Length: 212
Image (cartoon, rainbow, N blue to C red; front, side):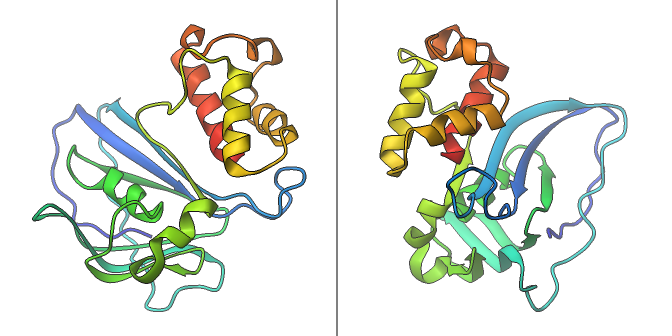
């Protein structure tokens, strides 16, 4: 769970947001022993008229046994700039947490940290029990992240993209169809090139590819 100091904002403002979801239960997808922690960074949206207060609850001193993400006093540097300066966060299994803040507040960096893409300079960071300070590469195969960009190949069809990600993940192609069904991607879209999809459809396919 995140802790932060509240700051006053205008009545109408742009809010960049990010989402963390904990480890789903085993069997969420057929043939899969577990589904990774899902990290999403949808980008800015408009909030009006009253901004939500940052999460007021702080992470407990001891992580719960079912905690998927545990950060304690984490510091991450981008160059010499502290993108995260003492962040505390705890996400339990099947829990959804919204990270809200202005541009540059460190939301995307927090997601990249949990995906094992940026190093921990100080503090304790664990995702699915993996100590990111010692082995951040060890969590990458178990975590999926969807950022601002879709990460899809626009000139390939939906099915071709899904086949590529299934092969890259070393799983059976049938997992691709299961993931598309889970994200409610219509079968008629399978043979369309990604560039022909709407923004919402591309985002659904991106999430499906992440779950493969």
